[in-house]
Length: 201
Length: 201
Image 1 (cartoon, rainbow over the protein chains, first blue to last red):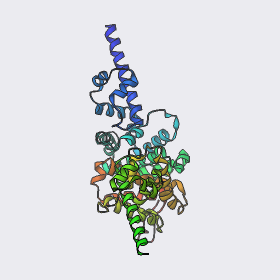
Image 2 (cartoon, helix red, strand yellow):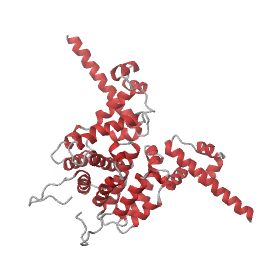
Image 3 (cartoon, rainbow over the protein chains, first blue to last red):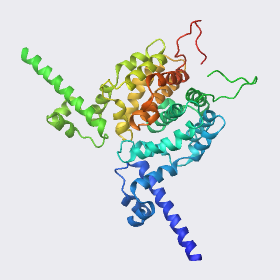
Image 4 (cartoon, chains in turn orange, blue):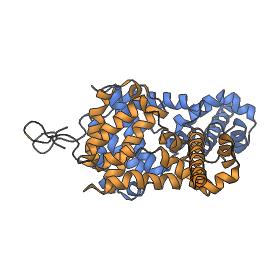
């Protein structure tokens, strides 16, 4: 029994190491450039073991992207005022460099053009970002999709293209504008003022 | 004299054909995947001629991207209400499929990760999109950069990733939200109402 538990734990550890190696590869190379053999070599295991653990390259790619998606975003989408919560989450997670977590944006931009990877990415953006938010909104999917598009665009120009004005701006400069963007797409993102009146939208 | 004019015209035509071939290549392949030899082969000229006409791969890439940038955007940035003009331009040029012009977004997403191409793209976004707009704004570069980021994000999720809610939405659904986004970044983008009162921002 002890041995069986040890074997299971060891399999879990190996699975996680494969996933971490996949995230690193897919963050630096396109879907097409990356092979399961590369990932197996990075981990020091046989490629057959990678196949056994994840089934296929598509499935490993999907699991790798999923593992970089921050559960806090889903929580923000469920908050009483999702726009306000998403603004705080975006500003904190993106503008503070302390997160240390792999950035799903890096995987996205490397494999956006891949005929194999692009449908997987589209489905993940749809299911993990747009739908949880759309379910909360009278505006539905269009408002949610536009909100996600704005956040993706800001992240892209700031962190991938390195646009100076976005890199040098601090939290307090960016936060009110991101809040207005979320309000434009999602409705209220501002606390009522002292008189209980929400600012005009 | 007639011969000299003919030679000049022929050189101009060849230069344009090289540029068109470069746009097509860079719209479908990354900067690294594309060679001057490929482009020369597409046009049916010697690679030395491509070198002579454009100097280097970097310069040809820059000229190719510049040739896809729509002068109408620059005009919109100069309009009395740039946010309103940019909204109209964005909705018309992007959502109507009739334009037929090469999309600079395709070149951007293929070469965003290239160490050689990315600085060229950053400089073009900065000079051709952000600066003309920033010069008009009290908010300066940050507001302009955020406005461009939103438009880029919407275009990316709609036209590259193919997010359904954005693809099926028509002009009239998207226009008021894009106008609000531009207003959030740039200030007024709405006509005063019948009483001459601008909507709250």
